[in-house]
Length: 318
Image (cartoon, rainbow, N blue to C red; front, side, top):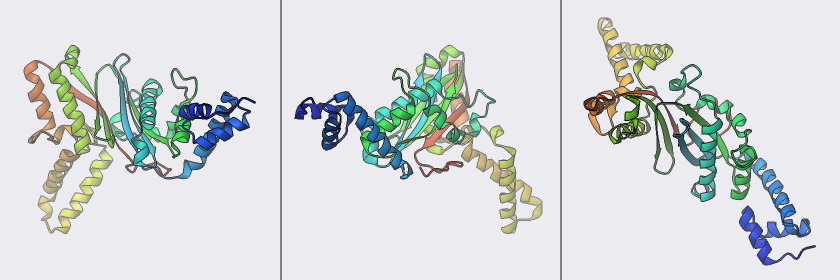
């Protein structure tokens, strides 16, 4: 049996992040063999991570990855239990790896039918997360699920990839992460001429649009994307409200349409008041900024994730 020195314990502890006594016991159990002790610690850590799977994870980070070479971009939300862990380099590195992984292998929601604008919060990805985690991480030879659980074992908390959105595009993509990673946005636009997409003026407009989505919680690009079922539900609500207020029947329809217009201005990106000048609508700002340059920009889609927000279909507590 190889001698178990303080230096060997310290070296293995740095490799695994495990506690000093856990490392010492693993080395003793493995007869001093470092690789054997490493396997013991990994198995123990994965088992402990599995036990933590039912604990609430309401902290974490939203992150984005954009690969200009492939035109693929991803937005992910990864949760943990405490803000302390969310701020560690180990957790941040995991989130970045998962964002790259999603960009490389995640399904592109919008290309299969143009439905991305109806799922800006990534709710349909909840059912596909496990499939993404089963795929091997590039350059590591093991599935993303194992990478995630190994990190959870080192951190001593429950960690999970909650959702993701992936855009595969030949257009222009802008990402924006608000402050501490609480909110993230991924936005795609078609720019004509395409070579103008890298001009500083165009990049600034794209950045402003992404910040707009983050700040004003846009749900659709424009009013034509609002489903008819949503429109009809709002009409019924506004009609009932107007009648309860005692408004004459002959003016109720006009009141309903006026309130519906205000609803569009709240949830449709291009009709919202611009974040830098509330007196101007976003769509008008884009035209004013780019038409003098001979550039046209059409927002195609966006995703907006806010850490731990409630999602339809999320059967697990965040």
